[in-house]
Amino acid sequence: MNSSRARISYLLPPLFLILTACGEGDPRSPSGSVPTPSPSPSPSPPPSVSEGFRNLQLALAHGSAFVIAPDTVIAATTVTNESSFPSPSVIEYNDTRVEWLGGRWGQGSVFPYTIAKLGQSTTYRDPSTISQTTGLPAYRAGNNNGVRFVLPANQNAFEIVLLDSGSRQPIDLMINGVATSALGYDGDQSQTGNAKYTRFSLPQASSARTITLHFGFRPYIGLRLPQGETVAAPALPATPASVVFIGDSITEGAVSPMSNRAWPMQASYRLGISNPIVSGVGGSGYLNRNPSDTGYNFRDRISDVLTAVDGGPPDAVVVAGGINDCSVAPGGPYTAEQVGNEALGYFQQLRAAAPKMAIFVLGPFTDYNNPNYSPTLYACRDAIFTAARQVDDTYTVDVSDWVTAENRDAVFDGIKNGPHPVATGHAIYGQRAAEKISQILLMR
Image (cartoon, rainbow, N blue to C red; front, side, top):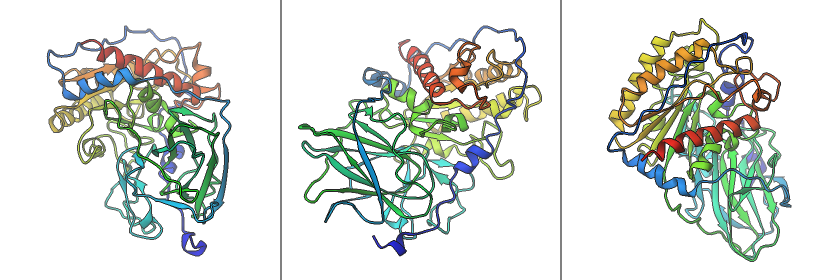
């Protein structure tokens, strides 16, 4: 690729909304001694559950925990603007043998975005605002984009081509569902706007391997292979259940080193969901917007749920919010009653538009300073759960005991990231969420 044409101004990343203004309570609020009400139980499933609920039940049999194989030896090198393979085989961005991960995508109208896929699953602000850089909505992106394909037997090298814009997240490489690095691969991301060709050299293998690559919300141009080599389409999942996760910066994966290792993805692996869609927006909630005048709350971006899968709703949506609405300490932006009323309207609108979709509702997460949960969070949780119980095929997941005085240093690494878990915390949240949702699914 010509260097002068490929050097572009980088995308204004939605990450600026994530890390500079998460707006999730006051991490300085005192912990105190808090009376602990009994967790609110999840309601029993109705006599006839939805098609989406049934599909999630079927997917459970294929779930497993996220695994890293530290002994896998992978060589990764990155070059700029042209392939390291002489006369490479070219797999274009729209090749149907490569599965796109993470939900909706768009093709830009400005080069080089005309030859790339850009994630469009998450709406941060008014989508009618068009980026001069890409020709796509300036405030839409993808939280957990990636690709999956099969590398045939005795093929041991390939390149992924990404535009150096929009995200500094490492590239995460999984082989047959197992991650190959604890930290991922840098990919020489410096936001210069160039095309980066990251070459992976794998151990020899006499059988085909399923390759999964996650790369945040960087634009994807395609794959390159040694001359004459090719790829195959991955096998269709035995139970292709679909799930959208709606939430704030905790769901988005703030502080997690890679978005595909944040708690929604950790839960999805365990639940057998092969291609979840994560739609977290830092600072958002049922009512709260960030920025307050132009940002979108959950209902503002309800289309992120209702059009998430081929223009329609998923089998299930998992909603995790409230901390930005009520905060941890008293005096949040909104009262529990206000949040509950808005949550009810949101759940009712979801149900009316997607009668076959199951709805799972998590209570608001806490922070480092409040491992015992706070009275404000309990009131907020109860208001949200009361709203959820008024809507058919809607199930509640209590999170009030997920952080304790004993595990908070593991969840937050002892560095007081406010409410944002580090990698071990996301793994804990993901495991607990999967356990709770599995319990609900197995009730029938």
